[in-house]
Image (tube, rainbow, N blue to C red; front, side, top):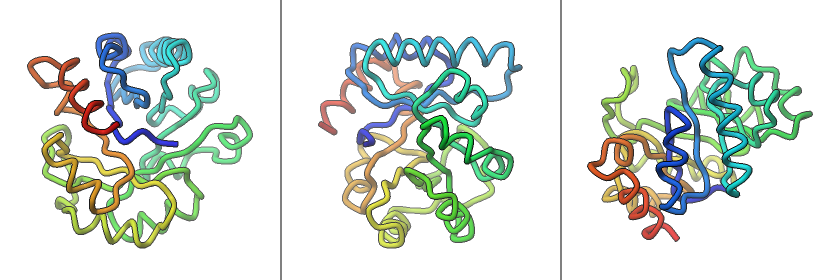
Length: 197
């Protein structure tokens, strides 16, 4: 259901730029932009991914995910409180949920998600995190708790660190800066694809 390589991008231009790498599963995560910017970006992303056989995950904007018929939505704990989960299910949209603590994992599992994300595994510079890095050992503990439910590792992940995450039980590794801030993002994404297929 998930691809082992799970890139996260902040604008639809990345979808085109990374296409030659062969990625198959991607999240569009747009932060701090007005809805009149976000709406067309999500529309473009849904159309692009559908045309190229790529599975798209829309971060946070669950109403727009329903409007544009995105196959997936990813929610943080705050967004989960406000989201209309029955409406998402009626629309056939699969759900991923972020977790950072035991309490958040319980909240996520109660929502019956299609995957759970755990992070940050390592320190990350992308955003301020109130949680200490979880470490590889927490991946194994989370996987024991959730069983067959897919687990996504996120936060400070690099290709060099990915093998340990997979070995600990991660089904997918979500990647932002290791690809988007690489000297050649498309080549770095291609390296991920080669290593995870």
